[in-house]
Amino acid sequence: MSEDRIAAPGTAEADWAGWLPGQDWPAWTVDPAWTRVAVCAAHPDDEVLGAGGVMALLARAGVQLDLVAATDGEASHPGSTVLSPAELAAARVVETEDALIELGVPARITRLRLPDSGLAAREDELTERLTAAVAGCDAVLAPWVGDAHPDHEAVGRAAGAAGETLGVPVWQYPVWTWHWAGPGDPRVPWSAAHRVDLPRAVRAAKRAAVARFATQVHPLGPGAADRVVLPADVLAHFDRDLEVLLR
Ligand SMILES: [Zn+2]
Image (cartoon, rainbow, N blue to C red; front, side):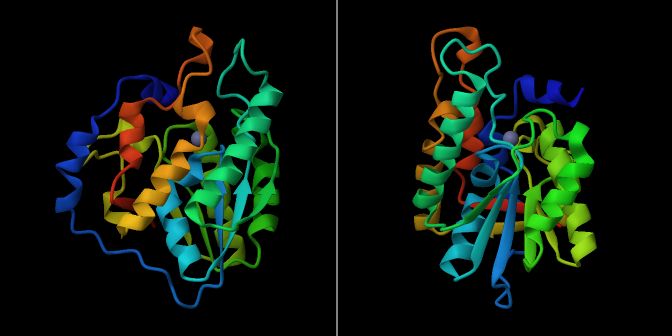
């Protein structure tokens, strides 16, 4: 199962750091014709981890950002003795708002409030509501359809369908891919990759934004069900001076 790739030990960031700079990918740039771009996320933090730098660059270029949040992330700590799913969701919604402030991104947020870990089972509804939410945007960002998390893949597929229906380009951002894949991994369509170089200030803003997801970057408590979701070795993939978009 694809989730096994997420649970298994991952690739060290040092391995990526030795490979990424040598890739001759075209640079992604903000299209001056864009006035409004939608960023779709399965869980609160996907958008910042995978495309926080892109969002900051868009905002700095004067582009209005619309965040479409498929779930509130209530399933990150099943069995937690510290936070109930409802408390977790409430905390994660606030974390996202704080992270967007750190990024300097005044996004309008549409919350679909679909079930965390249950998006693939509600994909028709997800696609319909996501399409309505991104209508009028000039481009759409979404998790990569091959990211190996079923929710990420469902949002990626829904965004792809929305892009087809509306006739707008969809750029996909990898998240868990950086953990389970490795340099040159044949499961990743590197020929579709574009590099996004992050200026120092944007990288610093992204780092501050990621730190706002306290329920994900720290343990909730000492119990096994409260363990950290994004440990330091995973977080290292999101502290680079570049992001990668697939299209
Ligand atoms: Zn996620």
